[in-house]
Image (cartoon, rainbow, N blue to C red; front, side, top):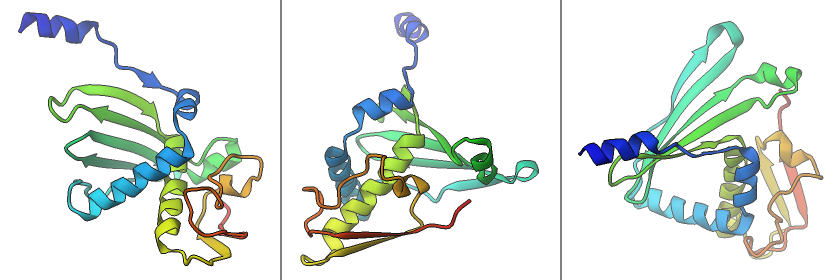
Length: 178
């Protein structure tokens, strides 16, 4: 027992910042992972209660807690949404993700969640498009897309990649600024 406690005291929880997250995430494996996650959730193999949301009144911000658990992993995303950050040159959505070992409850890693959230949202859209789009679809419309998708210089999954089966020629985004 004492040896386990000493080992726990010496172990530092790894933190992956946004640059480290960017170096590890790749579109095709992420889209495949989201396909599997959607199947597992639909099959009842994932516990994911509705997010808990707090309004941060004085700053017109929001704070949400989003836990999830499966046989493979346990984790929680803590996310904030501050619309006024856009005027400060900061992202409106900021997050951290904490991962735990499902067998022991031991905290495994803390990750910057801003980019993960952004890429996961796009990957779920790509996974849904792959399954739901007709084979001859030419136009893809995204509703409430994040501002980053409107920046052509930013890398996003190609709608003509191997992840999407139809040859999409036009991408239309509907986004409300702010």
